[in-house]
Every structure is written in C-alpha cells, then in structure tokens.
Amino acid sequence: MAQYKYSDRLVEAKSWAFDQDWKPGQPVTNAGIYRCRTCGDEIVADKGSVLPKSHHEHSLLGPVVWQLLVFAQKHPGR
Ligand SMILES: [Zn+2]
View (tube, helix red, strand yellow):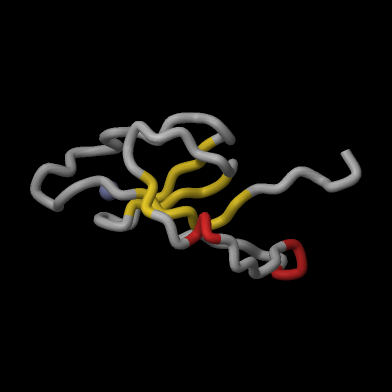
C-alpha cells in the first residue's frame, strides 16, 4: 500500500483517471503510482509511458489490470 508522511502535501481529487482500468501496454495520461488490482503491487509510471504487461509471475492470479493510485503533478507555476 502506498505510504506518505506529510498529508498536507497530498490532496484528494475526483478525476475520472482514478476510476479507469488501465491495461498493460496502454500509455498513461498521468505520471504517478499505479496499483495492480489483481495482486496489489504498485509501480511508478511517467506520463506517456506504457504500463508493464507482466510485472511478475501472474498467470495463477488473473489478469494484470492497473489502477491509478496517486498522480504526480508539476508545480502550476512552472
Ligand atoms: Zn499484479
């Protein structure tokens, strides 16, 4: 499970991107932490990068389906 220390540096958001299933091989529109719905592993992906098709042996668990957990945001002034 993703962890943080300073809650004042994170903000709750209602973006549709959190509700979408992200498929392996799909390019992501947000940089951030993605969680596999099937096994719970988390990865970091850059904006526009392709989500991994297999992040470990997964055949007995089910398909890899990614969920956006936290998205990274550039400072609005830059
Ligand atoms: Zn997984």
